[in-house]
Length: 319
Image (cartoon, rainbow, N blue to C red; front, side, top):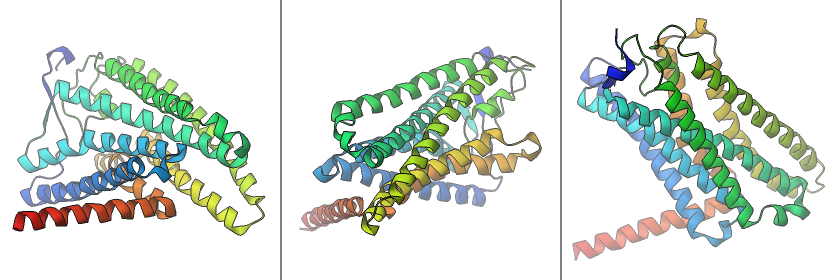
């Protein structure tokens, strides 16, 4: 029996007992992490450096890439370090920091995806009012509101979770400090406050989900009325990547937190956690650049400039 006030560290789930499997886990996570860093870094650089991409849609995409980098950097590096150094320990404050930054990035990202749905709705269904409603000042305010909502949500969840007495040990059956796994360590009914907070968040999340669905129903109705095939193709290329990212985000998170207890098992929980916390930050840049010619051209410029600069540096060092 232990109390949260006397805990100094938690022990995370060990992926494997043998060094070979731990190194395999380290290599897989390293590959995914580097892919996420490169892909999101290239999008941030492309949007910031190319004046053709200084529009509301790409401004919000830049913010999304920043949040994706923060999200994956909260969980993956610590898990890789544990596998590499054969340890499972994370300090009490380190665990609290993981919970805070994880909730912050995910809450802000979902708010930002809702704002991006509103942006697409105005661009396609209200094009005459788009320039007025989505000016630079309005975009900054919307992005700031998304980040602020993530901060407040993370503060509430972190403070509430770590104020709960923990009486069931300090072993977290997950590769990072996930709130549902921490709540399993709580005393009897002392976790009901956090459950209530999650229910309130669920209602807000559902409200945003309804807003996104209604927006896209109207968007697709407007797109199908566009007479030219080229116009429809351009409209779909603007909307389908965002819809794919929203679907990936919501499906994995909803399955992770709403699946029935009968389906819960340590191995399945880990797989689901990887799907919603590790995969999206690495896949989102690919989804957004797949059908977007403007972004593809900007990314080619960034990549060619990177290789050109690296080549010049190498030649200078050789001389």
